[in-house]
Length: 321
Image 1 (cartoon, rainbow, N blue to C red):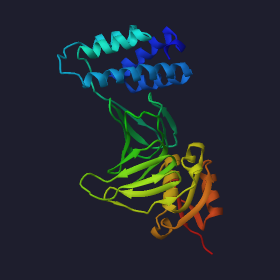
Image 2 (image 1 turned 180 degrees about the vertical axis):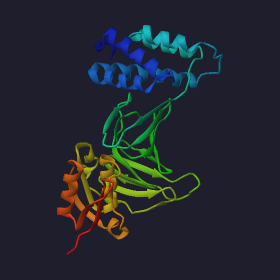
Image 3 (image 1 turned 60 degrees about the vertical axis):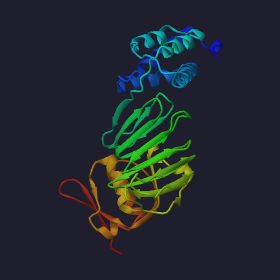
Image 4 (image 1 turned 90 degrees about the vertical axis):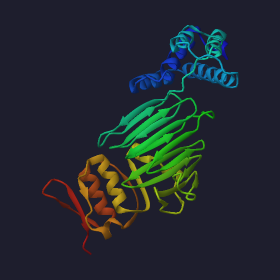
C-alpha cells in the first residue's frame, strides 16, 4: 500500500489527519480537507492509510494494561506530520504506546439561506447536500459519526467506515445508516425520510419501547417524535433527492408539503390558508423556475388559482370549476 504513495502525499495526509482529529479544527478546515481529499485518488488512499493505522494502534492500546497518560498531544501530531510509510505507523504506535489519545469530537455547523443549495463533503467520504433554509450540526468522534438536522432538508450520501456508525438526529428520533444514501426532510414537527440506496433504521426516543422502523431502498416514512405517522410507503428510488437538480416529485403528498418546499427556494412568499386545500394530495413532477413561472405551472397542473397579496406574496386558492 505505502509503496504506491509518495512521501509527500503521506506527509500531507498525516498533517490533515492530525489537524482534523485534534478536536480544534474549524468548519473551514474540514472544507479545505475535503477539497484536498477530492483532488486526487492518491490523497484519499493516503488519508485512509493514516486513519486505519491510527485505529489499529488505538485498538491495541485500549486492550493493553493501563499506563501513564501525560504526554502532550503535540508529540503525536509531530509524529504524524514527520512520519511516512512504515515510519508513520511506528510514530503512531509509539505515541499510543506511551499513553496518548483523545476522543474529543469535532463539531461543525452548516447553514443555507433561502434559495441556496450547498454541498458539504466531509473527510470520511460522506457528502451532505443542504436544501434552502436548512441547518445541520456535524459531530465526529473516534467511535461515532453524528449529524443533527435542526431544520430544512438534507440529502446524505454516507462514506463507508465500519468502525464508526453514522447516525442522524431529527425531530426527536435517530436515523442510523446501514450503508446508504437517504433524504431527511423536516416540515415543522414532522420528519419525512426516504431512501435512495441501502437501508436506514429509525429508532424511537429511549423512553419509548416501540416505534422502530427499518427502510430499504425505495421506501419512505413520515414520523414525529412520539409516533410514526405513516406506514412505510414505496417511492421511486431515482427520485429521492432530485431537488438537488431543481426537480420536485410528489406521489400523493399534501399540497402544503409542496408549498413548504417552494418556500425554501422563494422565501415565505406562497401561502395556502385553506386547510382543506392544503391537505389535498398531489401527484406530480415539477421543475423549478422563478417563483411566478413555477406557480403558473401549478395552476396548469392542479385545481388551484394564484391570487397576488398586497405584500407581494402569492395565495393559492381553490380554482373555480
